[in-house]
Amino acid sequence: MTQITALILRAISAGYQYGFDIMEACQLPSGTVYPALRRLEKAGYLASSWESTAAAQAAARPRRKIYELTTDGTTALHAAERRLAEARRLLRDLPPAPTGEA
Image 1 (cartoon, one colour):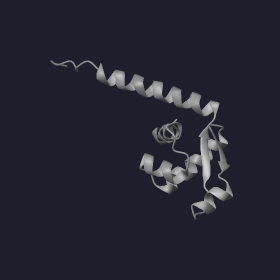
Image 2 (image 1 turned 135 degrees about the horizontal axis):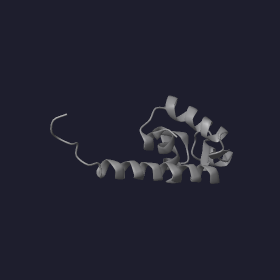
Image 3 (image 1 turned 30 degrees about the horizontal axis):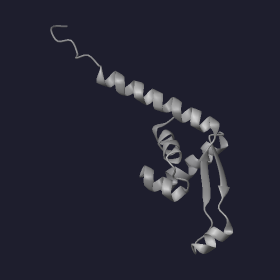
Image 4 (image 1 turned 90 degrees about the horizontal axis):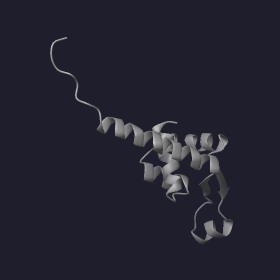
């Protein structure tokens, strides 16, 4: 899983539900976020639905697609977070390079 994919999944798990909100939270352009959302949904990591017409009309805007993590998406995110934590630990605990003559 790429860092961008993990970041998008993390944003959705934190409550960002709409494409534009995910873009802002991740500080990524639409050309990165929307294709990733489609791939993640196709892979079974996300489910989506459209908000109600009434909600969109009340806010005077087009309907928005709502994204949520599936069980597989949550599992994948947790695995990515564990890998990141392990990488951080390895970086933190990396011993100094040996000095001397080679």
